[in-house]
Length: 338
Length: 284
Image (cartoon, rainbow over all chains, first blue to last red; front, side, top):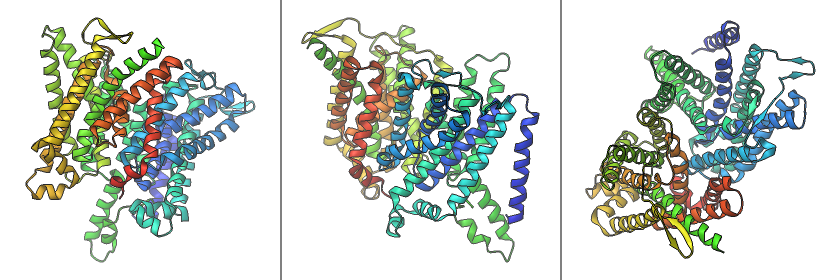
């Protein structure tokens, strides 16, 4: 894809994403999809570059949401300050727990992060300061002073702005010196280490950044819903983030967005289908679980690199058949975030 | 003092259940290096199947055995899918089994609904050292010990068991001496299905199970297996007992709702403390 084509494609996407909220009757689904894309963009970077899976990304969404809930409702901070703190607290939390946790790898880290999520769930539903058994309700609307966001459309644009920030930060990150260290990790940890990359610090950095994105999404969702409890962050939602990241493509800039949109659309389609007359009330969860699982398993077996890298290399390979191009070589390289 | 004995005895019984679930992780991991996320799901399947059979009037004993054999078959099916592609990295296989456990949740809701079910078990209770314990929980402990002795005899003292271990420690060499590594992997998944099934039919009479019970079961089983580095069966049994007793003591003397969290924190501490020895096999 040439630079101009890519630019045009992104411009079209931006326009469609910005116009869509004006035409949708109910924006709950849209806001949640965009926020999921924010979380998954970070997760896809972490999973792609650190080569590790986090099954408990919801823990950092929870950290962000709780920051907003506790600071606005119990400490009466202004909403904007609370929202600004959400990604910082989530990143700080990830840094502190990551210090010991990231020494683990593979399935130990996968189970470790899942355990972290369940511990966070337990704390949220038992510690009174964090909402205890009843949760925290009455979170004020996001805004400055008298000027607050009155309706769903406002939150749709806040979520889109968060996604834009997330993508910009990720893009600049990957092309920075830190980003090169991160990409070196993806190839081989021992090789990266011998080239002078501090493996633990680099992993911790990308883990904290992914957590900051999750915290930002969590903070916005706390204003949007506006209620936070121990049951707001079920494990299956964290699994869904992993499914979205795997489908879209790990270690790519746009993979998280593509995965989040496709899986959310699928889930929404099934919800609509299961609400049709004649189906039992259990049809909803049955269809959702089955579809999530089928999509995850099929993607892992047949498209292990995700949709975005597979499609881009297929395009590059077709182009390469035309004589006189050098893209043939590029097609064999794994596609990095550009 | 009497409270203390009660907590320890009930903790040991719960720990045996953890260890049974954990043994399934160990068997699959020893042979295939894959962590089988469906271990908790298999227990739920067995609980549900035995519930249905008992409700249809199948006598005790037979119903449980059929349920355990059925989960053995389900375990084999999971293995066929998880190992369907050669050279799949273990972390990808873990995620495939995660997908299988999500899919199983759909099947369980479809067949048995969303509410927790509990098949009838042994009634009554016994008194041990002044502590009263339900007969069903005692049965869990007895069966767990029998199963662990059986696994030990099989893996360390039988030709087939040694073949299974050989397939894991060096797949290429095992292949050269005529061991079918893939078949060994499938056998391990089937054994894991049977082990998960035994855990399920034994635990469910005391703790009702639903489609979402798989996660806590899998995590506590994994926590027990971590004590044995996912390879040692005896240390998994010890790990299960330690976790069970610690959880009961915390629940009894401190806060009841922290029981699972304590097991998870212990698992995290142990994994992090031992990360160097655990990391050897994971290193790229």
